[in-house]
Length: 589
Image (cartoon, rainbow, N blue to C red; front, side):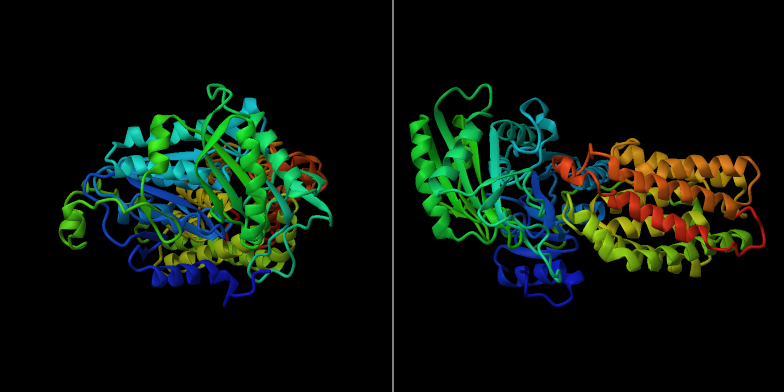
């Protein structure tokens, strides 16, 4: 049980405040996360770790000399938004480019990818790398689909050490890729974790059993087995990893090893387990190099552990052994700082940054005509209806999400819609056009909600507004096109198709039915209501599907019988919006 919090919705913000106050010699807080207390040396690649909170010491606990230059921090088990990632990158970069490092989760891939594209467009070279070490989440011939769990610690360490040595961006990326290709992790859970403010754990494990192949976002194991002795567990972990060893690793060799506690497994227990693991590795002809036993990538108060092996070569061993000085991880003497690393962080600190490309002013930001302002008002009403239904259904959506995910969908949707509505109301008060109102709403939703859903809803709202006129109410064809553009934006960004068990399963039939109804001459309200009914039916049908994307995919069998939370929340919002009367006196809106 997570017991110490104020407002659960502000748990991460309060944590960042306390973390920065406890470690002023290592970090300083910036919007979206933390960066090193001292500025990144001029010309050095800024390595940024990132992901949801709830995993300490990952990801912010390893910011400091020899390790990361900053950390982008999302809400508990929720990927940070692109806006947060960009903010931390702009605070950390020093002319050598930026590398975002994170686990292979859809929301992280999406949001860090967006931030990297935005930074690169503004003249700051930025790249992403997603860790894929979890052997339980996909078979050996599908390594690109594997999740990132505790093996990310080794990848982060070697890539950061390469950057500390002065390697250019492409070389740092190469090191991350090389480390990841030689890293394997397998974990088990003895009991689930509880979100701040939650009344029950996200999952439970029967007495005397363990969940094999856990996820670090509170996901249960992909299968269950009997909980035996430490010796038996060590044998299962080592045997599983050796069976999946990299093709070029050979039969013996030197390995970096991380025996990681998930949050509630005591260090003494881990050392009992390590004694058996070390003996089994020796029997297999493997020599551990600077093994780490302890909590490095946690999952709040989850009871469980994982074992990571990284097969080393000379380069990776040097980087794994390299010194580091961070709040949660110290090794050897702190790296020497360049003389200019002691400089003041104000005036000259920005001189080395490439000039940002000028941003083009959005035409929709101009004050709109009266008719367009009235159309924008409909968007505000729709967001109010969305807010009401999402807050009403938040707990139920969280329960749906907890079946094969981390249980935060309801909370995330509420944060997103609250921010979107506030932004839309402000833009509408300034008499802006529908496109500007919806763009403001989409940007706010994505920034505050984070995660996959936040990014997708933000993209959908922005695309929806992009085709609406600024000088009049939209016509029927424009409304149909707007819905189509929203669907295109979602599928382009997320890569999902109908049948993947995502919100696309509800959005696609809505879009098709809405356009068909409008083109058949139905009034807009009737067209929206009929299309919303199609979305509801499709959302219910997702209960029969097996997820092919996202966090739920490794637990596909567990998900069957439960509708997708993203499709369910979308259908609920569309149904609520469909009941709204138009307010402009025209059937065109």
